[in-house]
Length: 97
Ligand SMILES: Nc1ncnc2c1ncn2[C@@H]1O[C@H](COP(=O)(O)OP(=O)(O)OP(=O)(O)O)[C@@H](O)[C@H]1O
Ligand SMILES: [Mg+2]
Image 1 (tube, rainbow, N blue to C red):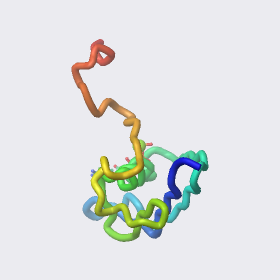
Image 2 (tube, rainbow, N blue to C red):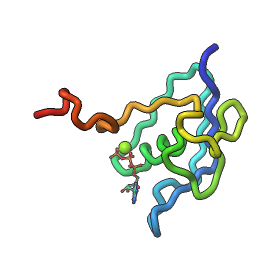
Image 3 (cartoon, rainbow, N blue to C red):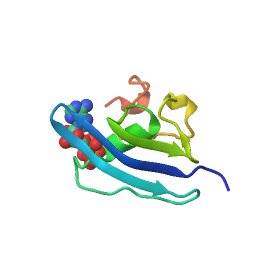
Image 4 (cartoon, rainbow, N blue to C red):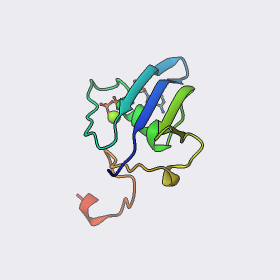
């Protein structure tokens, strides 16, 4: 089966005094369709950014198939991101209003 098992264990991330993630653990099995839902500001994007390699946890671990991927840059991880807002090509014709 394609894909990897994603294992997030006890991840915390603070911005200054504000704790955006507090001891978050989640396992996503290989091939599983997983939706992360929650109110605005609960930390969904922060967690996804950490999994994808655009941000780093203060503590905790992130593994793909039992391998520590935290030292790897985003392009070396088996993950892809569709950004909520455009991250590339700000002059793209679709963005002109
Ligand atoms: N770079 C940052 N500096 C300071 N605070 C931040 C930063 N990034 C996120 N936060 C704060 O961390 C909390 C979680 O933000 P996050 O963007 O992960 O939430 P979210 O669940 O994705 O929200 P939404 O549903 O609105 O997209 C929010 O209170 C946010 O203001
Ligand atoms: Mg978000």
